[in-house]
Image: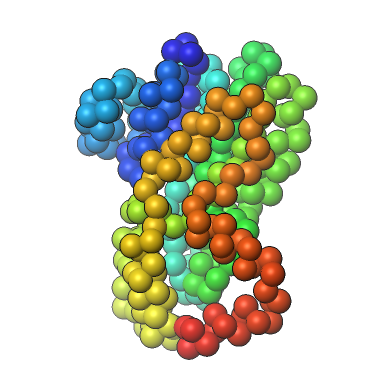
Length: 274
């Protein structure tokens, strides 16, 4: 499979870094996109430690021209759309520029890359597009409206693309992790501090939300678990449309599906004091 190339975006940390290493272990030509040379060095060091070879390309996924340049030189078997980041803030606290940047990275960029990857996959009659969503693609909580909105949008687009590309032999897969030990939690804390500094009326509730996440952190999984699911989706003859990853994701999905909306709203509001 060494001639089968798989590109993973956001490859320098968390799930992305674990994925490029795991994909290389499975015998693929593993390529990771990063936004800077220091981040490429992180990937190189991780690959060397694991005893595998991972190539890197410099790519800002929000830059349409860069995306076209990078993809024009690749004929991919697999595309793993992983690049993204967390955004915490009440709907009224998130300005337009933050919201647009988030959706550009986590919704428009994955679809742009999928669009650019499809011609080669269609010509080969085979290919895999794996979009890293989240349990947040299935549910919503206060202060995560824009983040969960982006994940909901990614899931809707993935569902449409899955049906549109199926006749050409291209499989489109959603991976929905629960909580994993990645940089997203540091982003959570930074956002809370920014909202408080701006004088948000939700300052105390933000702190309660952050404290709740900190209590859950010891239960969070290792990104390697998610990377193995991604690699499995790339190699399975008939991958599933969705993979929920992590016991917390399974539990949240079950509770969310069984709890009436009014009750869920009430519990979350009481817990956060809003």
